[in-house]
Length: 371
Image (cartoon, helix red, strand yellow):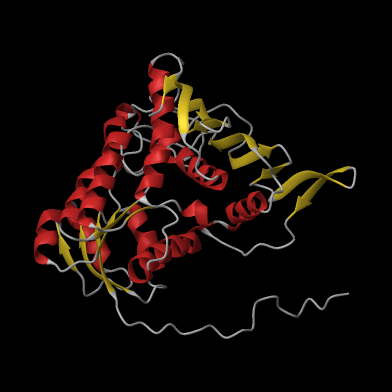
């Protein structure tokens, strides 16, 4: 019997990085998600936070109280910040509707740009951002942290090693029973571009799409419904009292995307839906095997037996540690030439998938092509 007093953590000494250059890092948007970025950057010694910008004075004051930000400069106008500060990286944590404008301005100013998900409001904005990065010869990264999740990497290895075969079908779930954010502008389509499909569905889409090898999407069908979020609610929920008066996004979105290689992706995303419980996962089915992201299980046939093989060990991760991985990848891309796992082109491909479903929904579920 194993001695439970013995820990399982690694006893190897951590290597101390020798830092020869520190990137001067600035934020545009110092609201909620920027705090997770700031904490992650404290674990990346190649970064120095030098500035932050927000239109709200209380957010600027909050920013200056965060770890590593005490000596930073703050601005109400990002254009002034770009003129006055020597910046290597602009980290965009604004509502979706400002991503394109700020990223393009940062790239034109000679900075590398990193933007939170989704990349922008639509594929046209994404294309503009990618073109600006190419012209400026700077890197553009998108905040797709679930590409760095151990469960996603397990699937990528399984596909690489031939355990899945040709991919036929992927099922994506990002479903909340009653989870409309009661902060920010998540219910305002003019600022966000959409609701649960673009906000939480994007992560299950981007990670499964990455595991598939990012095949070209060619067509989409979809439907969207709004039936609860735009009304007052007395139902007890995790985030009560959202602003239903300004709520213009969907409660529930369902769609299917067809890829050039013949594979299909079924997507379900909701802020509000009558289901048993919240679900966040994807599962993939191929000619030789399948994979369930949620249970970390490979399903295949072996020795004349239908076999489910579950991971015996995967590294423990949390929301914050995934941010360290994705931001470190971007830093390494700048300083070492490491390939970005989520470059602007990947962000644009994911945006085309989401946009296709929304466009189909506007046409009452008719199939639309994806260029």
